[in-house]
Image (cartoon, rainbow, N blue to C red; front, side):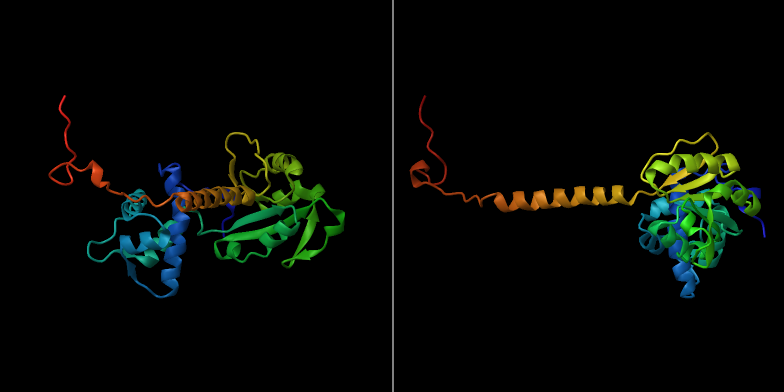
Length: 252
């Protein structure tokens, strides 16, 4: 089976927009669920709803893949699973190293979703000598002194950084120098990388802060709605004209 170092997905060369690439995993997740239920075909509306996008955007995204579906039938689920998996590079083995085996790193090592998507955790690396040799998810932790050798021996091109913020840039620099060209960063810091290196950042605290903003705004809107008094329109008979509701017009 080919490794991640010898092949890269063709999405850029084929001109697929980054926004479309970001939605492909959403479609794949929805399609996989349909496949597991033995659903043979799906309409663009049904799949769009399952993926949380609108159907027009879905059809546009699939047009980049050369998949247009069949009128009155929809899309073949199994073929789309294969097509999107191939486009994302998931039809091959991608060895991954995780650096930083604290609580988060250990949780990532135990996450079963990696293997089911073609990402094999090839090594766990940490700077703490007390962790060296300790098995996490059945994989012995290795020391950062051996990082470069580990990368080379396993043909790794994807690295996951789960270290404290202060150590992340140094780890990143060493990964890149060793040949890693794609990094998933869980450390709460921005990494500087050279051209040709892709970084995806996952910051849980930022996501929580965004949710807190929305919660605060909703609470403020509710408080404002409760504070507004009910406005009652009271008609004063003294303001009525001789014909009833129309006020009398005084002569100039």
